[in-house]
Image (tube, rainbow, N blue to C red; front, side):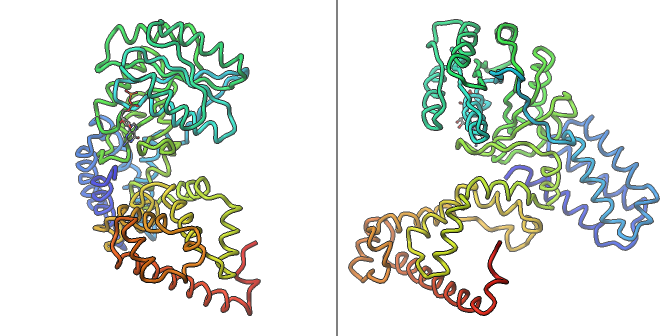
Length: 443
Ligand code: GDP
């Protein structure tokens, strides 16, 4: 997971302070030396590190911190606040034109994830009841246009394209025109990147900017490239005047340097982060939540938002009713499993729960996604009748299911046993609850 190394080191250094009843100026200075090293090793820009450490040290050796009842905690609070500040303080949101359509131009080097992010952003906007249109302006990278069309189909968003023979400026202009005609309120223009920053690319992007007057110019950069990402951002910003950055591949094992330096070096806010290849793997960037995550203090707000996005409340209530009345079937079980998986990779979700990212038992926990897929395969190999009435699952049916799902009969038995246990447990809970039901039930 991103930031793992940095997160571990910061937590170790600050953990030492946390427990101390008395913290001296020397303690703070020693801790800051270690924090400084940890940041440099995470590939944070050295000027940014210096300013950060100076600020934290100045605040942390102040009397109100050292003389407070919980000096260790106070130092952590200062680090948390300064990390948040470093990444921009407040969340920086997309802005929309007062008269639609709002034009958003996506720029960036090849391979950064521009086309993918254009699709993700379109889906994100759609979920907010906007009507986005994608415009295929990357006429150089082979297959970029087709890629965008496929993504558009997948998320059910219209894609405008004129093939790869027209000039990108004309494509952008025609795209905006079409969006207006079709009543789309947001236009996302995918543009062509190059392997490196070069003049021809910048010229082209500048002319597109001039002709369609975008409300937002979002630079897509790959977090894995560390300080290179920051240099690229600086060059694009100087030339085009960016309104925001989207940092992709934060699901990889990036050391985090780019996320922590981009804003401080370029003055340009990170607006979103990409956390996977799937279309729903895009998160609005919240500096405060990211700082808490890095310091192992969890990110409950993002977790709740993810759960809300993944779970349909109506269905959740229906499932709760089924559980209470003993009508819970394998179909329902499968549905729940999928809702949890929709929230993203499990190790990432666990990292958002306060305290869990530090819990020793979880350090080496490999959440076994494969295991979940096997459970899914087993349930899918059942007939509708078997899913509704698991009690009919005799030995020969179990053998058939094992064969059909490519698993073993032991695995099938284990799952059925677990399912039965779960039902038993629910039964106990619901009979226990009978006397004081009002107390247990929500709303
Ligand atoms: P473009 O050349 O900038 O348009 O790049 P693409 O959109 O084609 O993306 C390049 C590769 O990066 C593709 O394989 C994407 O699936 C992958 N990618 C994009 N964003 C993310 C992300 O947030 N996480 C991961 N793991 N992969 C990503």
